[in-house]
Length: 268
Image (cartoon, rainbow, N blue to C red; front, side, top):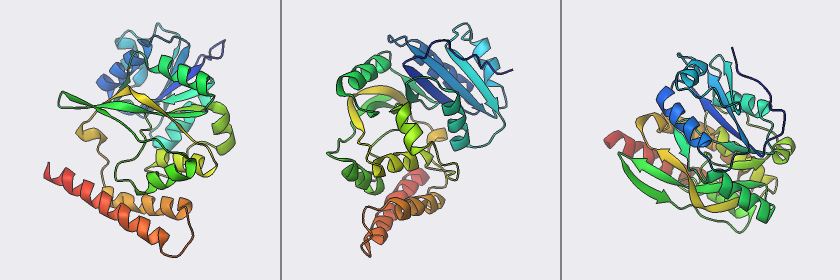
């Protein structure tokens, strides 16, 4: 049975995790959220058809006593649909996305809250720590002077200039621009960012790592070359200029980028 009790008081943050079959990693992710020093949050977990139900995993890890944790279960429908299920259930003022194989740092929500309240901004993306075979390195993301410049960066940079995990969004923004586009099997997070940028939302950069990203085979996007279909669709939808040739140029850059990343994964 789903643990779907709605909080009596609206929390500041709704941390939303979507998961399928990552029990150990999920438990680490959940514990990292519960260990945050800023306590005014709820944690909404959407189980997108795991073979071992997430509710059981959370109970066996003795994490069900915290009433801020809610688990929703559904048949396997896909990442965009599952993310939207979490958004529909979330009641916090801000939504913080966390991938099931990532962890929040203990000061993550406190730093997000400070930045949001001092700047009045409605969308935050943050630096993160990348962990590969036990070795760690901070990933510093670029800042942009305008939404238009960031839109071009998202479309053209080989490495995305934002990480969706840790991204925090004012609920009013999602009410305005809409939620994840469920027609995107891949890059639904990129499409949401591009839609926000096109609508004039200028995300704020938190220049401090608040997410620990565990690099492993399971989080390498498979079928990169097949994913170009979705990238080309994004470029057609959001290219910054309709001048002939601009879209083709961006598609050529993206093709080179994705081909290079595919080649690297093949020789590892």
